[in-house]
Length: 136
Image 1 (cartoon, rainbow, N blue to C red):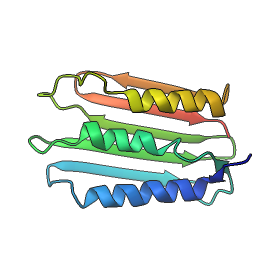
Image 2: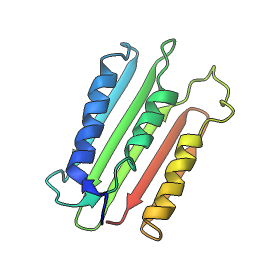
Image 3: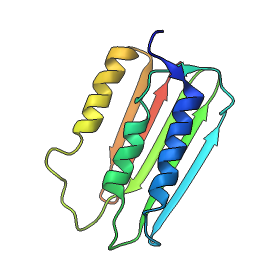
Image 4: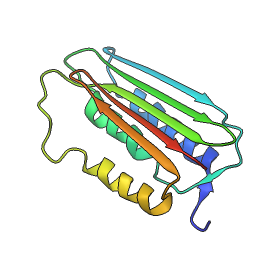
């Protein structure tokens, strides 16, 4: 479809973004990233996956206490799976108006991939977890 880019390019942009963020995170942050199936020829609309990554850094990085961020992207013949987990600061109340970025991304998913995705967002007191299954 028009406006789509290679999924490889999108994932490369994510890896570049994470590399950049790594330069500014402190020693108290544990970051893991894992990728599977990157030799894909699939196409994707840009800025579908990245907001979830940005969100994790925005809300998951704390300088005053240990924190962790986990990123996992798996591409198969049937789908692209994105899992993002980040710790939630104990001292930070839920920001009013936070989550608008993800709301916009969900609108985008509804528009671009109706009936082609499943998005799970879970939150407990200490962790925020997102799983996006994109059937492309």
